[in-house]
Length: 397
Image (tube, rainbow, N blue to C red; front, top):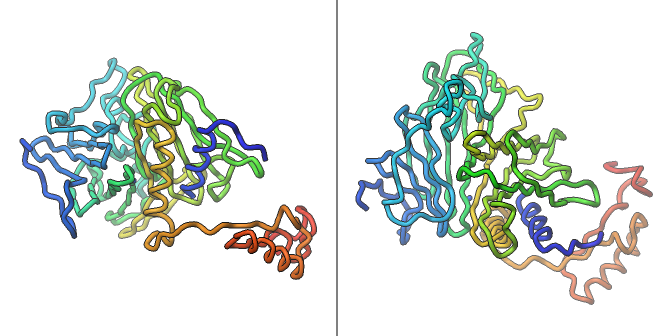
């Protein structure tokens, strides 16, 4: 396959494949096994604001006057407490809008008069489908923050977990739904979380699509009002679409320059990402988690459901830096052998030499030749099993 001359395309492909697959006020102290120069998670109690910080980014949430968890900021690191203010719900633009819809709720339930993409949608056994989540409590342990929410009527709880990876400039979101009611709850949609960008009307979306022998093809397009759904209904992540996104301003970012917000969903089953631009404020958000197509999860009393991890990061050094942050994160936190880092072995694949004509003698001879030129890992490709003489027979036998 011909390599693309576009360096961003190559970097974006690498990023997607790597992720298959995160004062003047009283501040809650960080709890750590070992002391570090600064806390990655702070709670400003006088403002009711949580500040999550990596080396170069900040993610800020707060409780508004309605006791709702509200997203306040995601981007370049904020310096000093003067940059922080208490959360306050947004007013409706007109009488037929709703304040709930205009407010950047961190984990909105489908209920009340909320009209945007919801993070959680349920039906109770008594027929109630309304869900309104309010803050209950929080806990900080090292680089992990857990926020507990509850429905205003029923004992349905949601634990939102945020883990900060300071060195890699990555934050991981995940949710856990708990049923403490005496009745069965049917979960119709369970998302991992929402990433909000600063309100603007000039964003560009980058995502990856493809097919067999043509995977991870870069698509870039402006984000217009409405919803863009990226998903897989195939039972796996698939190469038709990849659970990865990147968003930049005005389509001006390149490999070295520009602000880029990016993220990926760590899930190998059916998944969904919704990129939504809500007029009139042009608030762009990305919601991700389980695909709710043909989805129904019975949650019995006392049971819980955990969503996939949803990773997000920010770079003001273009797509290249976003790629490098992703690669570092995968090496440090995702790979099975991450506790014993080592160089990847030089690999040789037998396909180009033998295709389906696989037998022991030829493979041994090929491995000998490969070893002499420095190959450290030999992969015997298609054709070694059953009657696999072409790509229309024997696969999986």
